[in-house]
Amino acid sequence: MKTYFKLFRAPNLLIIIVLEYLLKTAVFEKLLSVEGIAYPINQIWFGLFVVSTVFVAIAGYIVNDIADVEIDKINRPDRALSSGVISISQAKSLQWFFEIAAIILGFSVAYHIGQPSLVNIHILLIFLLRTYAKKLKCKGLIGNITVAISTATVPAWVWIYSIFALQTSLPNTSFDFSFINLITLFYIGFAFIFTLIREIVKDLEDLKGDKECNCNTLAVSLPLQKVKNWVIVLNAIAIQGILVFIWLLFNRLPEVEIIAKGETLFAANFISIAIVILIHIIPKTIKANSSLDFHKIGNTLKIVMVAGIAQMLFLLM
Image (cartoon, rainbow, N blue to C red):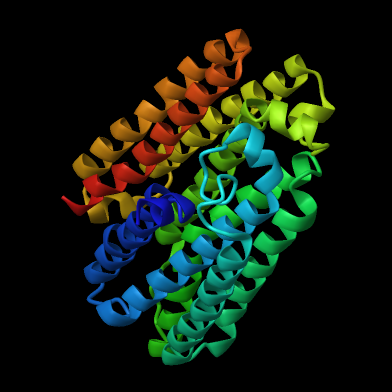
C-alpha cells in the first residue's frame, strides 16, 4: 500500500482535495450565502467531482513515472517503477483505469449540472499530461510551463464548474462575481507561478540524471547561474503578485465587508508568511550549488504553497 501511496503522490493529492473544498466552502458558499443563494452542486456531486480531478492527477503522475523510468534509476532509484516494485505494464493498466474513471465521473457531474461539455476539461488535461510526459518534459521551459498550467487547472476547475452550475440553476441572477473571481484568479496565478518555480528548482535537483539521459531541461540547457536567475526573478514576481492581491483585497473591493475585514486581515497576515519565506529563498538560491541544496529549496516552496492554501481557513471563521 505504501508503494502505491508514493506512486500516486498522496500528499499532493491531499493538497488538491483541501484546495478544492476550501474554494467551495470558504469562497463560493460563504459569499453566495450573503445573497441567500445556495451553492449549486450538492455534497455528493461535488465529492464525485473532486474524485474525478484526483484521478486525473494520479494518471498524470503514473504516466510521468513511466516516461521517467531511466532518469529515475539515477535520480530517484527508490521509486516504484524505477526500482521494479511495480512493472511498466501494471502502471499502464492503472493509468488507463484512472483516466477512464476520471472522464466517466467528470462527465456525470458535468451532465448533472446541465453542462456536459465541461468534461472536455478532463479530456484536455489528460491529453496535456500525456503530451508533457512523452514529448514536452525535455523541452526546457516549455515543459515547466506545461506542468504549471496543469496545476493551475485545479482551482480553475472548481471555478468553472461552479460558475456554469450557477448559470444553469440561476440564469437570471444579478449576483456580482467580481470578488469570487479575484480570489479564484489569485489562486490560479498562485498555483501557476509557484509550480513553475518549483519545477525549475526540481530540474536543478535532477540535473545529473537528466543530463545522462539527454533530457534537455532548462537546467541542462543553460548555465547554473542563469537558471538560478530565473528562480530569483520568478520569486520576485510572485512577491509582487501577492502584494497586489492584498492591496486589491483591502482597497479596491467593497465586498471585503461581506466576509468581515477582521477575518480578511487574518488571511492577509497569514499569506504574508509566504512573502517572508520567498524573500528567504532568494539568498538560499544564490548560494545553492548541490542537488541537496535545491531539494531543500523545493521543500520550502511546498511550505509556501500550503501556507497560501491554509489562509483560506481564516475566511471560514
